[in-house]
Length: 109
Image (cartoon, rainbow, N blue to C red):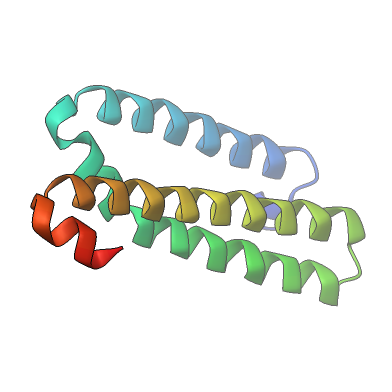
């Protein structure tokens, strides 16, 4: 029996990995200077896209195994990740507009 498919230890290990990843992510982002924060976050939209793809694949696998509750959770994760992607693109667009010259700003809109 694989440890991740164990009925007790499997979910415990997955929750532990989630907690460690959350703490490490917080520590890493906390050390980023504020000047680099917006460009860094706009560059991370690609990772959010990977998260969307992973959540959709998880939803399809759960649907194939007729696990309705897990499928709903996976699709909710995909929706939240899409909100993150859309927000990241909105922030990037706003940041790039700040660097436009006054004459070019009117022509782009």
